[in-house]
Length: 385
Image (cartoon, rainbow, N blue to C red; front, side, top):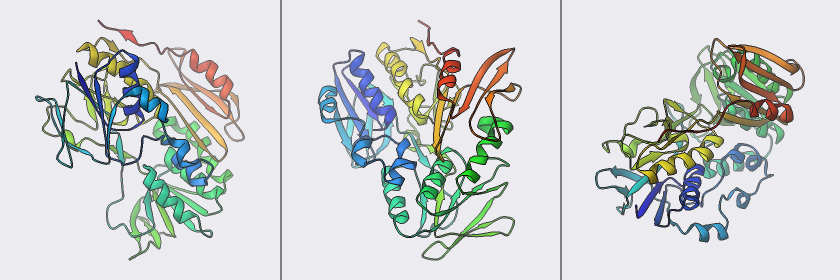
């Protein structure tokens, strides 16, 4: 293998480049990125960047010294539009064609939007440009902000807006935010963080329409209520960026379909990060984006699935001055157990048990005991050949 093309200058894409060099690949590496910015870290966008406590230079994933050491060719500001898997060629929007022996798909995901018109003042928060635009809106006097979606990005954005002095309402379609991820007991405890931060939480509500002609004036709910708004932030999830793969022979189903080693049906194509559906699961978390590339690159260089991913899922979120941490896998039949603290007040540590043993752990402001229980969960990759 002489040339590897990494499509996506994302966190996962940067880690794939690092792994290629760390695992001894000394051939040509070409990185294609749709954004013109140098690779940057995304988690601070909904926190420190909005609040002005994290500068844009601090987001950079690679300094000049590491860029030189990695010795890659960076083609930024031009998206990939198609993949000729048989010819192992990536076609770019500006007409250029990048030929290679292997391809790492790391195109990530794009923010979902609400149907209908999008007047000025309606934002998503996925990219650095998104964060810049929203930060500019929040820099003036107090505004009425409506955040649609109570997931992690929604909660973090609401927290940042409230800390900046704006009046914030969060609209969540489910009975509780984070209900699918955390279950009813823990989701109810996390929902109380909004009230602690001075944010109104509206649950079980569907958005019918964003109101406003040239500029947003409010959010109309399906039950007839109208929430006045000067700024609306839509945080209703993200869709994997896979359109450019249609017709390539790479299977796509809510992400790039991979085996447990991040390998697609074409051995010369692997996928990592938010775009990868690994062994039936697509994970939109920073930890997965940093750990999948080691296995994916090993298998790409081997030409087959030599190792599979056995990482225990892990994610964290910071909002309202608290840190939420989760590790493991929980199912509907698992038993929830409060280990320490209180679900009603302050922080807590909890586990889910399956067949008498912990299968997942959750902590709110309990970092040390969380790490102790997290380490007890199995996480070692298994060799398969």
